[in-house]
Image (cartoon, rainbow, N blue to C red):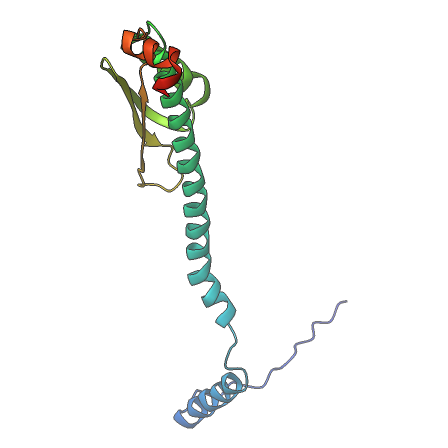
Length: 169
């Protein structure tokens, strides 16, 4: 037959005011010996989001700079095409749009190419928005290129005479 053995524990005393005060004093003494316990966690909770936000802004700045270079490349290509001999503003607009489609579709959002050609110069403006890394940040991109138009200018009769005569120089 199995015997059941009961283990007796000392009865608990009801908490008294002096016992609670003693427990609190001991707790404060332990905390005073290690005052910075848990400080690393609090610092990490505050510092890490700020560090991550700073890193994201650095990446956002890199994306904006890349988008600016893409817009500049498209504007340069459009200006060169539109400024060519017997070129047109429509040809420049088409060249700029093709360049943006080829190299800028991921980084430059909602691009617009504006080409203005006069008798003497071509002005191309490419605008858009850089891709977003930081939520809520929309950085605009703008590139402007102005070039002279290639055109045929016949040599004037006065120029021929001054070049031909040795006294003219």
